[in-house]
Image 1 (tube, helix red, strand yellow):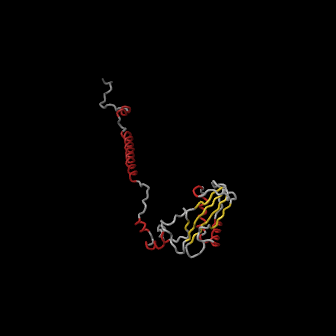
Image 2: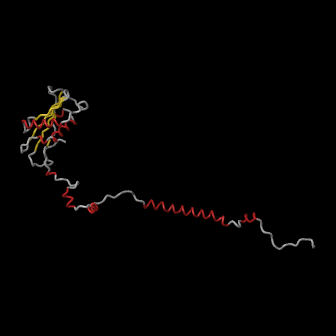
Image 3: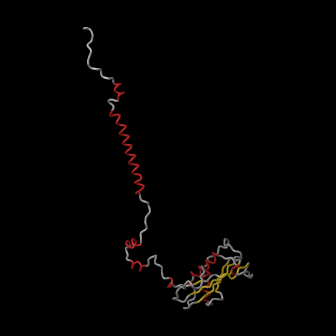
Length: 234
């Protein structure tokens, strides 16, 4: 009896592997994944909330045009001064504009194979758009060459276009009220102002054309006619 060891009353401490199986001593390490998941969830929630708010409140990029009252308030000049200076939007009174020349619709007097052939006239002749436009422009540009009679007068300008000889000629016709040296002087001014036609690229059915334009020069101080006046060449 004396040789046997005395039993102890304290149980032995559990081993480390047993504590790990029970989850004892690892509380701080287990909480870390949970906190990370909460942070990620919070960030995702903020993003989901911020994106709709930004799309709802973002500017459209359209600029509203200023109203008339806004422009008037921003103008540094009073309205009366703006009108006296002649603003771009103010149109002049069309009934008081002095017109220096009126040009009636062009007449195609003749179209033929040559100057010696009778040929056709009127609607049977094809048009020469570039040549006709240049003819009308030359009449308008040389209005200062017209006779100064102090009263209204007309000159019937006649344009000869010859594709055979590649030449043009302008002279006053017999139907105008103004004839003589002054009318011929005005016709010569128009001839000098005419550009040479593009002979090779101008489409034409005939080789010789005669075109007439009746130009009316109003008396000094006369005003432009109303819409019911004589038709003008456009």
